Length: 204
Image (cartoon, rainbow, N blue to C red; front, side, top):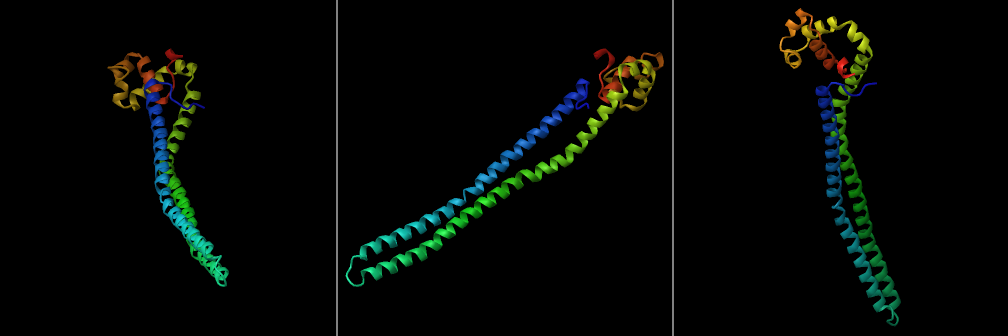
């Protein structure tokens, strides 16, 4: 299996595309962490509610301790105060804890969503094209070995001259059709092999 083209120009382009994809994934991950942490800060509200409930319960407990020693009604009054403290503060504490758990769950959901959606879109757009390229490069490497290139140089030169864009041909020769007519196949063969992602015989 050939993952990358052998010719320098398409190799640089493919490496740049792969690096860009990895950089984008890293950016998505950083944004996801920032979203998670930003939403998670809202848990401080629930924490404040829980702490307020704890303060209310402590206040009722202090008051109950203060009246507990009174004769006749002290014990009953202290019990009422403790019961009221547990009832009032307990609801606040429970609400605060539930709020914190809800914020943590929401932060995790939004963080993963921020990463997963763009990452999946990137993968859906990039990976199929990259897989097709790998398959094409692998097939070309098997079909265009050194022996085949040497024996069929004229056919490869004709293929290059008749099918490749002029800009690609002119990177290898100033006169592609003249080279073909004169039987000077090497530049055209190099252009054909570069387009296929295979090393030229001179680079072997």
